[in-house]
Length: 616
Image (cartoon, rainbow, N blue to C red; front, top):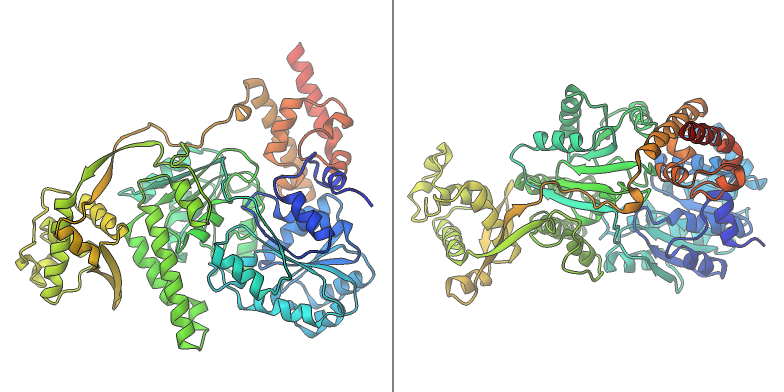
Protein backbone atom coordinates (compact mmCIF):
# COMPACT_ATOMS: atom_id res chain seq x y z
CA UNK A 1 0.00 0.00 0.00
CA UNK A 2 1.26 3.45 -0.89
CA UNK A 3 2.14 5.90 1.86
CA UNK A 4 -0.05 9.00 2.32
CA UNK A 5 2.97 11.27 1.65
CA UNK A 6 3.59 9.72 -1.77
CA UNK A 7 -0.07 10.23 -2.75
CA UNK A 8 0.07 13.84 -1.54
CA UNK A 9 3.07 14.46 -3.79
CA UNK A 10 1.63 12.51 -6.70
CA UNK A 11 -1.82 14.12 -6.81
CA UNK A 12 -1.44 17.48 -5.11
CA UNK A 13 2.23 18.31 -5.60
CA UNK A 14 3.08 18.94 -1.94
CA UNK A 15 6.08 17.40 -0.21
CA UNK A 16 4.65 17.50 3.32
CA UNK A 17 1.27 17.60 5.03
CA UNK A 18 0.00 20.68 6.81
CA UNK A 19 -0.57 20.63 10.56
CA UNK A 20 -3.29 18.16 11.51
CA UNK A 21 -3.70 16.50 8.12
CA UNK A 22 -1.47 13.48 8.74
CA UNK A 23 -2.94 12.97 12.21
CA UNK A 24 -6.44 12.85 10.74
CA UNK A 25 -5.42 10.46 7.96
CA UNK A 26 -3.60 8.12 10.35
CA UNK A 27 -6.68 8.00 12.62
CA UNK A 28 -8.97 7.24 9.68
CA UNK A 29 -6.70 4.49 8.34
CA UNK A 30 -6.67 2.91 11.82
CA UNK A 31 -10.48 2.71 11.67
CA UNK A 32 -11.32 5.60 14.03
CA UNK A 33 -14.07 8.19 13.66
CA UNK A 34 -12.64 11.71 13.39
CA UNK A 35 -13.85 15.21 14.32
CA UNK A 36 -11.55 17.80 12.73
CA UNK A 37 -11.87 21.55 13.32
CA UNK A 38 -9.51 23.21 10.85
CA UNK A 39 -9.74 26.79 9.53
CA UNK A 40 -10.54 27.62 5.92
CA UNK A 41 -7.44 27.01 3.82
CA UNK A 42 -5.99 24.41 6.21
CA UNK A 43 -6.69 21.55 3.79
CA UNK A 44 -9.62 19.67 5.34
CA UNK A 45 -10.59 18.04 2.05
CA UNK A 46 -7.14 16.50 1.61
CA UNK A 47 -7.71 14.53 4.83
CA UNK A 48 -10.63 12.55 3.47
CA UNK A 49 -9.48 12.55 -0.17
CA UNK A 50 -6.11 10.93 0.56
CA UNK A 51 -7.77 8.54 3.02
CA UNK A 52 -10.35 7.57 0.39
CA UNK A 53 -7.56 6.56 -2.01
CA UNK A 54 -6.04 4.27 0.63
CA UNK A 55 -9.28 2.72 1.91
CA UNK A 56 -11.06 -0.11 0.09
CA UNK A 57 -14.43 0.64 -1.47
CA UNK A 58 -16.10 4.01 -1.73
CA UNK A 59 -15.99 7.17 0.39
CA UNK A 60 -19.22 9.17 0.52
CA UNK A 61 -18.77 12.88 1.17
CA UNK A 62 -21.86 14.66 2.50
CA UNK A 63 -21.65 18.23 1.23
CA UNK A 64 -24.23 21.03 1.61
CA UNK A 65 -23.83 23.06 -1.58
CA UNK A 66 -24.09 22.18 -5.25
CA UNK A 67 -21.33 24.63 -6.23
CA UNK A 68 -19.00 23.17 -3.60
CA UNK A 69 -19.49 19.61 -4.87
CA UNK A 70 -19.03 20.62 -8.49
CA UNK A 71 -15.81 22.51 -7.77
CA UNK A 72 -14.30 19.74 -5.67
CA UNK A 73 -15.16 17.00 -8.17
CA UNK A 74 -13.75 19.03 -11.07
CA UNK A 75 -10.59 19.72 -9.08
CA UNK A 76 -10.20 15.98 -8.37
CA UNK A 77 -10.61 15.20 -12.07
CA UNK A 78 -7.83 17.68 -12.79
CA UNK A 79 -5.38 15.63 -10.72
CA UNK A 80 -6.63 12.24 -11.90
CA UNK A 81 -8.80 11.14 -8.96
CA UNK A 82 -12.11 9.45 -9.99
CA UNK A 83 -15.05 11.19 -8.32
CA UNK A 84 -18.70 12.07 -8.96
CA UNK A 85 -21.58 13.91 -7.29
CA UNK A 86 -25.29 13.48 -6.71
CA UNK A 87 -27.53 16.48 -6.08
CA UNK A 88 -30.56 18.27 -7.47
CA UNK A 89 -28.61 19.76 -10.39
CA UNK A 90 -28.24 16.44 -12.25
CA UNK A 91 -30.86 14.80 -14.44
CA UNK A 92 -32.41 11.42 -13.68
CA UNK A 93 -30.32 9.92 -16.51
CA UNK A 94 -27.15 11.35 -14.97
CA UNK A 95 -28.18 10.02 -11.57
CA UNK A 96 -28.68 6.47 -12.86
CA UNK A 97 -25.40 6.61 -14.81
CA UNK A 98 -23.57 7.73 -11.65
CA UNK A 99 -25.22 5.00 -9.58
CA UNK A 100 -24.23 2.42 -12.17
CA UNK A 101 -20.67 3.74 -12.20
CA UNK A 102 -20.39 3.59 -8.42
CA UNK A 103 -21.55 -0.06 -8.44
CA UNK A 104 -18.94 -0.90 -11.08
CA UNK A 105 -16.18 0.65 -8.97
CA UNK A 106 -15.50 3.61 -11.26
CA UNK A 107 -15.30 6.17 -8.43
CA UNK A 108 -13.41 6.40 -5.15
CA UNK A 109 -15.31 9.46 -3.90
CA UNK A 110 -19.01 10.23 -4.25
CA UNK A 111 -20.22 13.68 -3.11
CA UNK A 112 -23.86 13.67 -2.00
CA UNK A 113 -26.28 16.36 -0.84
CA UNK A 114 -27.69 15.47 2.62
CA UNK A 115 -31.25 15.58 1.26
CA UNK A 116 -30.42 12.69 -1.11
CA UNK A 117 -29.15 10.22 1.49
CA UNK A 118 -32.51 8.75 2.48
CA UNK A 119 -34.12 8.76 -0.98
CA UNK A 120 -35.11 5.28 -2.12
CA UNK A 121 -32.93 5.16 -5.24
CA UNK A 122 -29.76 6.30 -3.48
CA UNK A 123 -30.25 4.25 -0.31
CA UNK A 124 -30.88 1.08 -2.31
CA UNK A 125 -27.53 1.44 -4.11
CA UNK A 126 -25.69 2.49 -0.93
CA UNK A 127 -26.81 -0.73 0.75
CA UNK A 128 -25.22 -2.78 -2.05
CA UNK A 129 -21.79 -1.19 -2.34
CA UNK A 130 -18.79 -1.34 0.02
CA UNK A 131 -18.69 2.05 1.80
CA UNK A 132 -15.50 2.51 3.82
CA UNK A 133 -16.09 6.05 5.06
CA UNK A 134 -18.75 8.73 5.26
CA UNK A 135 -17.11 12.17 5.49
CA UNK A 136 -19.37 15.00 6.64
CA UNK A 137 -18.16 18.33 5.28
CA UNK A 138 -19.30 21.62 6.87
CA UNK A 139 -20.29 19.50 9.88
CA UNK A 140 -21.37 22.54 11.93
CA UNK A 141 -24.60 22.44 9.91
CA UNK A 142 -25.79 19.67 12.23
CA UNK A 143 -25.82 21.97 15.28
CA UNK A 144 -28.62 24.32 16.26
CA UNK A 145 -25.88 26.45 17.84
CA UNK A 146 -24.14 26.59 14.45
CA UNK A 147 -24.66 29.50 12.09
CA UNK A 148 -25.83 27.28 9.20
CA UNK A 149 -28.11 24.75 10.92
CA UNK A 150 -29.52 22.35 8.35
CA UNK A 151 -32.29 19.92 9.31
CA UNK A 152 -31.27 17.35 6.68
CA UNK A 153 -27.91 16.83 8.40
CA UNK A 154 -29.80 15.05 11.19
CA UNK A 155 -30.56 12.26 8.66
CA UNK A 156 -26.88 11.27 8.46
CA UNK A 157 -26.84 8.89 11.48
CA UNK A 158 -30.15 7.41 10.26
CA UNK A 159 -28.51 6.76 6.88
CA UNK A 160 -25.50 5.13 8.57
CA UNK A 161 -27.80 2.82 10.53
CA UNK A 162 -29.41 1.61 7.28
CA UNK A 163 -26.13 0.34 5.79
CA UNK A 164 -25.10 -3.31 6.02
CA UNK A 165 -22.00 -2.33 7.98
CA UNK A 166 -21.39 1.02 9.66
CA UNK A 167 -18.44 2.73 7.94
CA UNK A 168 -15.94 5.11 9.52
CA UNK A 169 -17.63 8.47 10.08
CA UNK A 170 -15.59 11.66 9.91
CA UNK A 171 -16.71 15.26 10.43
CA UNK A 172 -14.93 18.39 9.21
CA UNK A 173 -15.64 22.05 9.87
CA UNK A 174 -13.77 25.34 9.77
CA UNK A 175 -15.58 27.10 12.62
CA UNK A 176 -16.92 25.51 15.76
CA UNK A 177 -17.28 26.64 19.35
CA UNK A 178 -17.03 24.04 22.12
CA UNK A 179 -20.84 23.75 22.12
CA UNK A 180 -20.93 23.10 18.37
CA UNK A 181 -18.15 20.50 18.68
CA UNK A 182 -20.19 18.62 21.28
CA UNK A 183 -23.28 18.82 19.07
CA UNK A 184 -21.41 17.45 16.06
CA UNK A 185 -20.14 14.43 18.01
CA UNK A 186 -23.56 13.82 19.61
CA UNK A 187 -25.88 14.32 16.63
CA UNK A 188 -23.67 12.41 14.18
CA UNK A 189 -23.23 9.68 16.82
CA UNK A 190 -19.46 9.60 16.39
CA UNK A 191 -17.83 6.71 18.23
CA UNK A 192 -14.98 7.84 20.48
CA UNK A 193 -13.76 10.19 17.76
CA UNK A 194 -10.19 11.36 17.38
CA UNK A 195 -10.59 15.13 17.81
CA UNK A 196 -8.15 17.25 15.81
CA UNK A 197 -7.98 21.01 16.24
CA UNK A 198 -5.26 22.84 14.36
CA UNK A 199 -6.02 26.31 15.64
CA UNK A 200 -8.05 29.05 14.04
CA UNK A 201 -5.28 31.59 13.51
CA UNK A 202 -4.62 32.56 9.87
CA UNK A 203 -1.50 34.70 10.16
CA UNK A 204 -1.62 35.88 6.53
CA UNK A 205 -4.99 37.58 7.08
CA UNK A 206 -5.27 41.21 8.15
CA UNK A 207 -8.46 41.91 10.13
CA UNK A 208 -9.87 45.41 10.13
CA UNK A 209 -13.02 47.20 11.25
CA UNK A 210 -13.94 50.62 9.91
CA UNK A 211 -16.93 52.81 10.82
CA UNK A 212 -17.12 55.18 7.85
CA UNK A 213 -19.68 57.92 7.42
CA UNK A 214 -20.09 56.79 3.80
CA UNK A 215 -19.67 53.06 3.25
CA UNK A 216 -19.60 53.27 -0.54
CA UNK A 217 -16.76 55.80 -0.54
CA UNK A 218 -14.85 53.58 1.88
CA UNK A 219 -15.46 50.49 -0.29
CA UNK A 220 -14.25 52.27 -3.41
CA UNK A 221 -11.10 53.24 -1.53
CA UNK A 222 -10.48 49.61 -0.53
CA UNK A 223 -10.96 48.45 -4.11
CA UNK A 224 -8.51 51.11 -5.28
CA UNK A 225 -5.95 49.77 -2.78
CA UNK A 226 -6.51 46.28 -4.24
CA UNK A 227 -6.68 47.32 -7.89
CA UNK A 228 -6.77 44.35 -10.24
CA UNK A 229 -7.02 41.80 -7.41
CA UNK A 230 -9.82 39.32 -6.84
CA UNK A 231 -12.19 39.95 -3.93
CA UNK A 232 -15.62 39.38 -2.38
CA UNK A 233 -17.99 42.02 -0.96
CA UNK A 234 -20.62 40.56 1.35
CA UNK A 235 -23.92 42.38 1.92
CA UNK A 236 -26.75 41.53 4.33
CA UNK A 237 -29.66 41.77 1.87
CA UNK A 238 -30.41 41.21 -1.80
CA UNK A 239 -31.28 44.90 -2.16
CA UNK A 240 -27.84 45.90 -0.85
CA UNK A 241 -26.17 43.46 -3.26
CA UNK A 242 -27.98 45.04 -6.21
CA UNK A 243 -27.16 48.61 -5.12
CA UNK A 244 -23.48 47.92 -4.35
CA UNK A 245 -22.89 45.90 -7.52
CA UNK A 246 -24.45 48.61 -9.67
CA UNK A 247 -22.36 51.32 -7.98
CA UNK A 248 -19.13 49.34 -8.50
CA UNK A 249 -19.92 48.75 -12.16
CA UNK A 250 -20.70 52.46 -12.63
CA UNK A 251 -17.28 53.24 -11.13
CA UNK A 252 -15.52 51.00 -13.64
CA UNK A 253 -15.00 47.82 -11.61
CA UNK A 254 -15.55 44.38 -13.13
CA UNK A 255 -18.16 43.30 -10.57
CA UNK A 256 -20.91 40.69 -10.59
CA UNK A 257 -23.56 39.61 -8.08
CA UNK A 258 -24.92 36.55 -6.30
CA UNK A 259 -28.03 36.11 -4.16
CA UNK A 260 -30.95 33.73 -3.77
CA UNK A 261 -33.29 36.01 -5.74
CA UNK A 262 -31.46 35.36 -9.02
CA UNK A 263 -32.27 32.42 -11.27
CA UNK A 264 -30.12 29.30 -10.95
CA UNK A 265 -28.79 29.99 -14.42
CA UNK A 266 -27.67 33.55 -13.63
CA UNK A 267 -26.13 32.55 -10.29
CA UNK A 268 -24.14 29.81 -12.03
CA UNK A 269 -23.02 32.20 -14.78
CA UNK A 270 -21.98 34.93 -12.34
CA UNK A 271 -20.11 32.49 -10.13
CA UNK A 272 -18.30 31.13 -13.18
CA UNK A 273 -17.32 34.66 -14.26
CA UNK A 274 -15.77 35.18 -10.83
CA UNK A 275 -14.02 31.80 -10.69
CA UNK A 276 -12.62 32.29 -14.19
CA UNK A 277 -11.37 35.82 -13.33
CA UNK A 278 -13.60 37.39 -15.97
CA UNK A 279 -15.04 39.45 -13.08
CA UNK A 280 -12.67 40.42 -10.29
CA UNK A 281 -15.26 41.40 -7.63
CA UNK A 282 -18.18 39.29 -6.42
CA UNK A 283 -20.90 41.16 -4.51
CA UNK A 284 -23.03 38.65 -2.65
CA UNK A 285 -25.21 37.68 0.27
CA UNK A 286 -24.15 34.78 2.47
CA UNK A 287 -25.80 32.49 -0.11
CA UNK A 288 -22.43 32.64 -1.87
CA UNK A 289 -19.32 30.95 -0.77
CA UNK A 290 -19.56 28.04 1.66
CA UNK A 291 -16.60 25.95 0.60
CA UNK A 292 -15.65 28.14 -2.37
CA UNK A 293 -12.14 26.98 -3.29
CA UNK A 294 -10.98 30.01 -5.31
CA UNK A 295 -7.42 30.40 -4.07
CA UNK A 296 -6.49 33.91 -5.19
CA UNK A 297 -9.07 35.99 -3.27
CA UNK A 298 -7.01 38.91 -1.96
CA UNK A 299 -9.68 40.72 0.03
CA UNK A 300 -13.07 40.12 1.62
CA UNK A 301 -15.11 43.17 2.60
CA UNK A 302 -18.24 42.89 4.71
CA UNK A 303 -20.34 45.87 3.63
CA UNK A 304 -22.74 44.93 6.43
CA UNK A 305 -21.96 43.18 9.70
CA UNK A 306 -22.88 39.45 9.66
CA UNK A 307 -25.14 37.88 12.31
CA UNK A 308 -22.37 36.00 14.13
CA UNK A 309 -18.62 35.50 14.42
CA UNK A 310 -18.84 31.98 12.99
CA UNK A 311 -20.26 33.34 9.73
CA UNK A 312 -17.84 36.25 9.71
CA UNK A 313 -14.75 34.10 10.19
CA UNK A 314 -15.86 31.56 7.63
CA UNK A 315 -16.66 34.24 5.03
CA UNK A 316 -13.56 36.33 5.78
CA UNK A 317 -11.51 33.13 5.58
CA UNK A 318 -12.20 32.89 1.85
CA UNK A 319 -9.41 35.42 1.47
CA UNK A 320 -5.82 34.27 1.28
CA UNK A 321 -6.44 30.54 0.81
CA UNK A 322 -3.14 30.36 -1.10
CA UNK A 323 -1.24 31.62 1.93
CA UNK A 324 -0.62 35.07 0.45
CA UNK A 325 -1.33 38.23 2.53
CA UNK A 326 -4.98 39.25 2.29
CA UNK A 327 -7.37 41.79 3.82
CA UNK A 328 -10.58 41.08 5.76
CA UNK A 329 -12.38 44.38 6.34
CA UNK A 330 -15.71 44.92 8.13
CA UNK A 331 -17.56 48.19 7.48
CA UNK A 332 -19.62 48.66 10.63
CA UNK A 333 -22.70 50.74 11.32
CA UNK A 334 -25.07 50.59 14.29
CA UNK A 335 -27.85 50.10 11.74
CA UNK A 336 -26.36 46.66 10.96
CA UNK A 337 -27.44 45.46 14.41
CA UNK A 338 -31.06 46.41 13.76
CA UNK A 339 -31.01 44.77 10.32
CA UNK A 340 -29.60 41.53 11.71
CA UNK A 341 -32.08 41.46 14.58
CA UNK A 342 -34.88 41.78 12.02
CA UNK A 343 -33.38 38.98 9.87
CA UNK A 344 -32.97 36.68 12.88
CA UNK A 345 -36.57 37.08 13.99
CA UNK A 346 -37.89 36.43 10.50
CA UNK A 347 -35.43 33.75 9.45
CA UNK A 348 -36.75 30.88 7.39
CA UNK A 349 -35.12 28.33 9.71
CA UNK A 350 -37.03 29.70 12.71
CA UNK A 351 -40.30 29.99 10.78
CA UNK A 352 -40.21 26.29 9.78
CA UNK A 353 -40.00 25.10 13.41
CA UNK A 354 -43.46 24.41 14.85
CA UNK A 355 -42.32 23.97 18.45
CA UNK A 356 -42.67 27.50 19.85
CA UNK A 357 -40.22 26.91 22.73
CA UNK A 358 -37.57 25.53 20.36
CA UNK A 359 -38.11 28.41 17.94
CA UNK A 360 -37.70 30.98 20.71
CA UNK A 361 -34.60 29.15 21.95
CA UNK A 362 -33.00 29.28 18.49
CA UNK A 363 -33.78 32.99 18.16
CA UNK A 364 -32.29 33.66 21.61
CA UNK A 365 -29.11 31.78 20.66
CA UNK A 366 -28.86 33.75 17.42
CA UNK A 367 -29.23 37.04 19.31
CA UNK A 368 -26.48 36.03 21.74
CA UNK A 369 -24.16 35.33 18.78
CA UNK A 370 -25.14 38.71 17.30
CA UNK A 371 -24.12 40.38 20.58
CA UNK A 372 -20.66 38.78 20.38
CA UNK A 373 -20.37 39.89 16.75
CA UNK A 374 -21.23 43.45 17.78
CA UNK A 375 -18.57 43.38 20.51
CA UNK A 376 -16.03 42.43 17.82
CA UNK A 377 -17.18 45.24 15.52
CA UNK A 378 -16.85 47.86 18.28
CA UNK A 379 -13.69 46.49 19.90
CA UNK A 380 -10.68 48.69 20.66
CA UNK A 381 -8.48 45.70 21.54
CA UNK A 382 -6.81 43.13 19.27
CA UNK A 383 -9.38 41.74 16.81
CA UNK A 384 -7.45 38.52 16.24
CA UNK A 385 -7.39 37.89 19.98
CA UNK A 386 -11.14 38.45 20.23
CA UNK A 387 -11.78 36.00 17.36
CA UNK A 388 -9.49 33.31 18.71
CA UNK A 389 -10.80 33.57 22.26
CA UNK A 390 -14.37 33.27 20.98
CA UNK A 391 -13.41 29.92 19.49
CA UNK A 392 -11.78 28.82 22.72
CA UNK A 393 -8.12 29.54 21.93
CA UNK A 394 -5.64 31.58 23.90
CA UNK A 395 -4.05 34.49 22.08
CA UNK A 396 -1.56 37.26 22.85
CA UNK A 397 -2.82 40.77 23.60
CA UNK A 398 -1.48 42.11 20.29
CA UNK A 399 -0.98 40.63 16.80
CA UNK A 400 0.27 43.76 14.97
CA UNK A 401 -1.84 42.63 12.00
CA UNK A 402 -5.29 44.06 12.70
CA UNK A 403 -6.75 47.57 12.66
CA UNK A 404 -6.82 47.83 16.46
CA UNK A 405 -3.19 46.79 16.84
CA UNK A 406 -2.21 49.26 14.12
CA UNK A 407 -3.97 52.09 15.92
CA UNK A 408 -2.59 53.97 18.91
CA UNK A 409 -5.03 54.46 21.76
CA UNK A 410 -5.10 56.35 25.01
CA UNK A 411 -7.30 55.45 27.96
CA UNK A 412 -9.82 58.14 28.88
CA UNK A 413 -12.05 58.22 31.94
CA UNK A 414 -15.63 58.76 30.74
CA UNK A 415 -17.37 57.97 34.03
CA UNK A 416 -19.02 61.42 34.10
CA UNK A 417 -20.36 61.01 30.57
CA UNK A 418 -21.46 57.46 31.44
CA UNK A 419 -23.47 58.79 34.39
CA UNK A 420 -25.23 61.25 32.10
CA UNK A 421 -26.08 58.49 29.59
CA UNK A 422 -27.36 56.20 32.34
CA UNK A 423 -29.38 59.06 33.82
CA UNK A 424 -30.94 59.75 30.42
CA UNK A 425 -32.02 56.12 30.00
CA UNK A 426 -33.40 56.03 33.55
CA UNK A 427 -35.38 59.29 33.26
CA UNK A 428 -36.75 58.32 29.85
CA UNK A 429 -38.02 55.03 31.23
CA UNK A 430 -39.57 56.77 34.26
CA UNK A 431 -41.39 59.05 31.82
CA UNK A 432 -42.70 56.03 29.87
CA UNK A 433 -40.34 56.24 26.88
CA UNK A 434 -38.56 53.30 25.24
CA UNK A 435 -35.46 54.79 23.61
CA UNK A 436 -33.17 53.11 21.09
CA UNK A 437 -29.45 53.86 21.04
CA UNK A 438 -29.90 56.41 18.27
CA UNK A 439 -32.76 58.21 19.98
CA UNK A 440 -30.85 58.27 23.28
CA UNK A 441 -27.88 59.85 21.54
CA UNK A 442 -30.21 62.40 19.93
CA UNK A 443 -31.67 63.39 23.30
CA UNK A 444 -28.27 63.70 24.98
CA UNK A 445 -26.89 65.69 22.06
CA UNK A 446 -29.84 68.10 22.00
CA UNK A 447 -31.02 67.13 18.51
CA UNK A 448 -33.53 69.47 16.82
CA UNK A 449 -35.16 66.64 14.83
CA UNK A 450 -38.95 66.95 14.52
CA UNK A 451 -39.54 63.59 16.17
CA UNK A 452 -37.77 64.81 19.33
CA UNK A 453 -40.18 67.71 19.67
CA UNK A 454 -43.23 65.67 18.62
CA UNK A 455 -42.49 63.12 21.38
CA UNK A 456 -41.66 65.97 23.85
CA UNK A 457 -38.27 64.37 24.51
CA UNK A 458 -36.80 67.87 24.66
CA UNK A 459 -38.61 68.25 28.00
CA UNK A 460 -36.43 65.59 29.65
CA UNK A 461 -33.94 67.05 32.13
CA UNK A 462 -31.14 65.16 30.33
CA UNK A 463 -31.92 66.77 26.96
CA UNK A 464 -28.74 68.31 25.54
CA UNK A 465 -26.47 67.52 28.50
CA UNK A 466 -23.83 66.09 26.11
CA UNK A 467 -24.30 68.66 23.36
CA UNK A 468 -20.56 69.41 23.33
CA UNK A 469 -19.97 65.94 21.87
CA UNK A 470 -20.81 64.75 18.38
CA UNK A 471 -23.57 62.19 17.77
CA UNK A 472 -20.84 59.79 16.69
CA UNK A 473 -18.95 60.19 20.00
CA UNK A 474 -22.10 59.78 22.08
CA UNK A 475 -23.05 56.69 20.09
CA UNK A 476 -19.58 55.21 20.66
CA UNK A 477 -19.86 55.81 24.41
CA UNK A 478 -23.26 54.12 24.48
CA UNK A 479 -21.71 51.14 22.65
CA UNK A 480 -18.96 51.06 25.30
CA UNK A 481 -21.54 50.92 28.09
CA UNK A 482 -23.32 48.07 26.30
CA UNK A 483 -19.99 46.26 25.91
CA UNK A 484 -19.27 46.74 29.64
CA UNK A 485 -22.81 45.49 30.39
CA UNK A 486 -23.96 48.65 32.13
CA UNK A 487 -26.70 48.86 29.52
CA UNK A 488 -28.38 46.07 27.60
CA UNK A 489 -30.54 46.02 24.49
CA UNK A 490 -34.02 44.60 24.81
CA UNK A 491 -36.50 43.94 22.00
CA UNK A 492 -39.37 46.41 21.90
CA UNK A 493 -41.72 46.15 18.93
CA UNK A 494 -39.67 46.76 15.76
CA UNK A 495 -36.46 47.97 17.43
CA UNK A 496 -34.28 47.50 20.50
CA UNK A 497 -34.50 49.76 23.52
CA UNK A 498 -31.74 50.50 25.99
CA UNK A 499 -32.33 49.31 29.55
CA UNK A 500 -30.25 49.48 32.72
CA UNK A 501 -28.39 46.70 34.55
CA UNK A 502 -27.14 46.51 38.16
CA UNK A 503 -23.73 47.63 36.88
CA UNK A 504 -25.30 50.96 35.87
CA UNK A 505 -26.25 51.56 39.49
CA UNK A 506 -22.65 50.85 40.51
CA UNK A 507 -21.48 53.60 38.13
CA UNK A 508 -23.96 56.10 39.58
CA UNK A 509 -22.80 55.25 43.13
CA UNK A 510 -19.13 55.74 42.12
CA UNK A 511 -18.42 52.06 42.75
CA UNK A 512 -17.39 51.53 39.14
CA UNK A 513 -15.41 53.73 36.75
CA UNK A 514 -15.73 53.61 32.99
CA UNK A 515 -12.60 53.97 30.87
CA UNK A 516 -12.64 54.22 27.11
CA UNK A 517 -9.82 53.54 24.66
CA UNK A 518 -9.78 56.47 22.25
CA UNK A 519 -7.82 56.33 18.97
CA UNK A 520 -5.29 59.15 18.72
CA UNK A 521 -2.92 58.30 15.83
CA UNK A 522 -3.59 55.91 13.02
CA UNK A 523 -0.89 54.39 10.87
CA UNK A 524 -1.09 55.60 7.30
CA UNK A 525 -2.15 52.30 5.74
CA UNK A 526 -3.74 49.29 7.34
CA UNK A 527 -2.81 46.25 5.29
CA UNK A 528 -1.70 42.69 5.77
CA UNK A 529 1.88 42.34 6.88
CA UNK A 530 4.20 41.42 4.04
CA UNK A 531 6.48 38.44 4.48
CA UNK A 532 9.87 38.63 2.70
CA UNK A 533 8.96 35.53 0.70
CA UNK A 534 6.00 37.34 -0.87
CA UNK A 535 8.08 40.22 -2.22
CA UNK A 536 8.99 39.68 -5.87
CA UNK A 537 11.84 41.39 -7.70
CA UNK A 538 10.77 43.19 -10.92
CA UNK A 539 12.04 40.40 -13.22
CA UNK A 540 10.02 37.82 -11.27
CA UNK A 541 6.94 40.04 -11.37
CA UNK A 542 7.15 40.21 -15.17
CA UNK A 543 7.59 36.43 -15.39
CA UNK A 544 4.66 35.93 -13.03
CA UNK A 545 2.39 37.88 -15.38
CA UNK A 546 3.55 35.77 -18.36
CA UNK A 547 2.76 32.59 -16.44
CA UNK A 548 -0.65 33.97 -15.49
CA UNK A 549 -1.36 34.77 -19.15
CA UNK A 550 -0.53 31.18 -20.16
CA UNK A 551 -2.68 29.85 -17.32
CA UNK A 552 -5.61 31.97 -18.49
CA UNK A 553 -5.21 30.73 -22.06
CA UNK A 554 -5.20 27.10 -20.89
CA UNK A 555 -8.19 27.64 -18.59
CA UNK A 556 -10.24 29.12 -21.44
CA UNK A 557 -9.27 26.24 -23.72
CA UNK A 558 -10.17 23.57 -21.17
CA UNK A 559 -13.18 25.30 -19.65
CA UNK A 560 -11.93 25.23 -16.06
CA UNK A 561 -11.12 28.08 -13.62
CA UNK A 562 -7.49 29.28 -13.79
CA UNK A 563 -6.70 28.20 -10.22
CA UNK A 564 -7.71 24.62 -11.12
CA UNK A 565 -4.59 24.54 -13.29
CA UNK A 566 -2.18 26.21 -10.87
CA UNK A 567 -2.71 28.62 -7.98
CA UNK A 568 -1.01 32.01 -7.80
CA UNK A 569 1.15 30.59 -5.00
CA UNK A 570 2.35 27.81 -7.34
CA UNK A 571 3.18 30.33 -10.08
CA UNK A 572 5.15 32.41 -7.58
CA UNK A 573 7.08 29.31 -6.54
CA UNK A 574 7.90 28.70 -10.21
CA UNK A 575 9.30 32.22 -10.40
CA UNK A 576 11.48 31.56 -7.36
CA UNK A 577 12.73 28.09 -8.33
CA UNK A 578 12.97 28.55 -12.11
CA UNK A 579 12.74 24.81 -12.99
CA UNK A 580 14.40 23.77 -16.26
CA UNK A 581 12.96 20.25 -16.69
CA UNK A 582 9.98 18.15 -15.59
CA UNK A 583 11.87 16.67 -12.65
CA UNK A 584 12.56 20.14 -11.26
CA UNK A 585 9.01 21.22 -12.12
CA UNK A 586 7.78 18.46 -9.80
CA UNK A 587 9.63 20.19 -6.94
CA UNK A 588 7.40 23.27 -7.29
CA UNK A 589 4.73 23.42 -4.57
CA UNK A 590 1.37 22.43 -6.03
CA UNK A 591 2.67 20.54 -9.10
CA UNK A 592 1.72 16.86 -8.91
CA UNK A 593 2.38 14.07 -11.42
CA UNK A 594 -0.73 14.60 -13.54
CA UNK A 595 -0.36 18.38 -13.74
CA UNK A 596 3.37 18.13 -14.49
CA UNK A 597 2.61 15.78 -17.38
CA UNK A 598 -0.33 17.84 -18.60
CA UNK A 599 1.01 21.39 -18.30
CA UNK A 600 4.67 21.16 -17.34
CA UNK A 601 6.27 21.57 -20.80
CA UNK A 602 4.17 24.62 -21.67
CA UNK A 603 5.11 26.43 -18.47
CA UNK A 604 8.74 25.33 -18.84
CA UNK A 605 8.72 26.99 -22.26
CA UNK A 606 7.77 30.33 -20.71
CA UNK A 607 10.39 29.91 -17.98
CA UNK A 608 13.18 29.06 -20.46
CA UNK A 609 12.29 31.93 -22.79
CA UNK A 610 12.30 34.38 -19.91
CA UNK A 611 15.63 33.05 -18.63
CA UNK A 612 17.26 33.33 -22.06
CA UNK A 613 15.98 36.90 -22.50
CA UNK A 614 17.33 37.86 -19.08
CA UNK A 615 20.80 36.51 -19.92
CA UNK A 616 21.09 38.40 -23.25
